Length: 369
Image 1 (cartoon, rainbow, N blue to C red):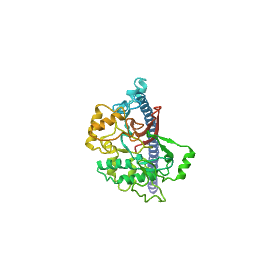
Image 2: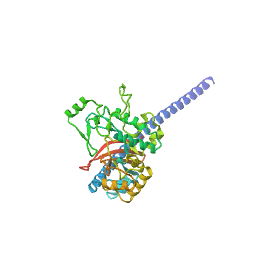
Image 3: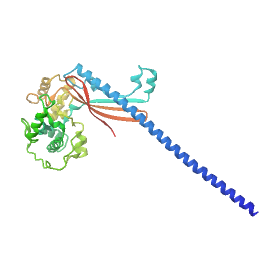
């Protein structure tokens, strides 16, 4: 009986051991299968994201073609009624590929496109606060500071911050390659020869320009000898680094201000009333709203039309400077979204359109986080 009892105990231990081995094996195998499934899912997500990026790139090329064809039709005027100003609602990719073939139409059934084109020169360009009258020379533009002050005041923001932004912009540009460009009459920038660049550097970066340009319009740059230079402004969000600006103030400005690579005039065919009132001296917001309302009836073909509209709105202004006010645009912001099955991609692209050849170049591309 002792032998039978011992045998029964041994069989019980063997069964328990076998069950433990089976359970442990099941846990290991399930873990391996789970990791494999996660890896497969990750690879699928990477594939979908790569496909969404290629679709977004194709849509961007299509948009650039629209900008070029629009410039071929109206080379001297950019207005809100153009083809570029029509946004694309969320649309299936199969609607675009249906004429190519049924197979490709089925492939695009779960892919959606949406987007719009924004006139970047409809906003106040913070880059205008600093001018480059000579290679390597960065000067403060007093007139643009006054315009920015008016814009800040209209938005309920402290207008004195305009001077601080100008100094911050100049300090950030001090080590930028764009300081070796000179400003021309039509608002474009031309690169200079190495000899001119070295001569300008020999003069010193603090040389004063002419006209409305000055290095010290009652402003003192206390951080000129700071060991660490401030970062260059690349967007309106960079104002968060400027003392005095809050997140709420930047959110208000985001609709009316921008930062472009070069100085640019404001397009009076597309600018909102707040920007128009800011850039036109002596113009109130109500007059700017009347100006915009008249613009909705018929767009402006040239600076003469703008001058007549300003006079009709009750503004006593002098001749329009094409480097400050214009009716055409060179910089556009393209907003695009691609929903490709599980992958979602939101992309913002700044595009430059050459006013002579009408070709387009991508300045930068940023993806939403």
